[in-house]
Image (tube, rainbow, N blue to C red; front, side, top):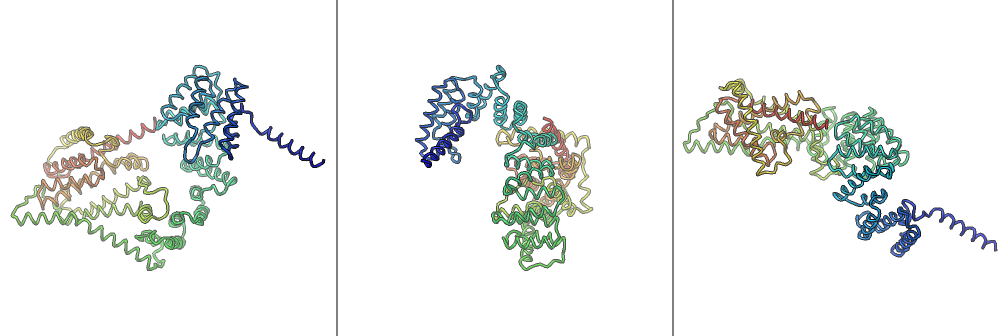
Length: 616
């Protein structure tokens, strides 16, 4: 008897608990509870719960919430998150349409319908919702208005200003809603870093979701707020230490100046087997810059054990030697350094591919008694052509080794997984500065006293040269307009095509200032490019083949080195015209002025374009 009574008490208790935890069909989010009940006998349970929804609605016909929850139950019961497929898609759409026909102005229904529309259909639904809010704002609660404005913001593709306005409105209507992350991202894209920081810092305590806290911490690192980022990382670690990205923590410690702790996080990251090579590479970069040469060498040799191709050309080992030249070399390390030496020899040989044919063509013309009469009388010969070709290739190779070596080695030898990939955008300003300096020095190496006179020689007055330079700019604009009819130049704008390195110039201005960009791009670059192409190459090739072929040849090379086939004809004509003026004026000064004016115009346009973009 006692056991029967105990069973009755337990059963009654279970029923009571179930009754307390089972939500009413007319309560918000009830569909989520009932979807969980579909784990077994899904079809049978689905129909049973759907019948219960129908029965509840029949007895409570005024419960709009129950009707919305019924649609949500249908829409989510058979939704496959991984396949992004809904077996009940047609029934869901029918339910939503029927509901909207009955209640086209009820906020709950309007929001649910907008949530289930995509693209242009969603924008249309949101516009109608916004009109309803304006007409009957009293019917819409703050959170309901915020839902519409947030969806509006998320639907704005590449319209940062409009998205920002809607995010701000959503935040104002529902202060409990935390939209500081997308708002801060837009501010950062607009260059308004102070506003981005203020937005993030004002709502740090509202975060509970680890993924969101992690994204905020990462963004704060980008905004140069390492201490606050570290605070967020600590909060994440208290909840789930496995969620911490050790490389991000190392960055934080480095920003704070704690290099030992930064190295500890990087070393901790190398314990994991997955993608271990890349993680040891990150540790080596830290050791090379901040640790002793002995520590850097130890990390380097650990890398070699993991993958011997990691330092294929021995560049890393050479960098360690710069820190301490007395550290011992292993045979394998010397072998990789020999490969670097061999690669420079290959670069030395490559120019013969185009220098020897020109020399052979000149010899052939002489054998056929065709006299080549030089019109320029430049003192550069075929050996100078080979030298400047070698120095140009060597400068390109040096930029690759200094700035992109690790990325290219990882890519070609399939070493680990690097999320940066071949990120040529990384370090554009220092890369550009390094390259310009190398090319300027290379040009100096082929100069002699007897050729300096060609730089400033001209038989044309300064006023006439400047006038022709302005006409040259106008001609370039017309030429680009004409080429646009035959070649897709949609990705280019007038400023960017007149000078191919648009991103590099903007990066130079942002890093070193407008004045430095003007000096480098408008003075140094035109000077060495005109000396190389219209001076050394045109003068050397003309002695072998005559002016017409030499001018075409140097213009083709000039077009090729800009690495843009869609603009090949533009650069070709640019080179031909400047080459023509070298012959006409008996010197390089006119071409240098044309080139300098062209580049100065581009730099100024890009400067104001970036300023206007930041203000907008």
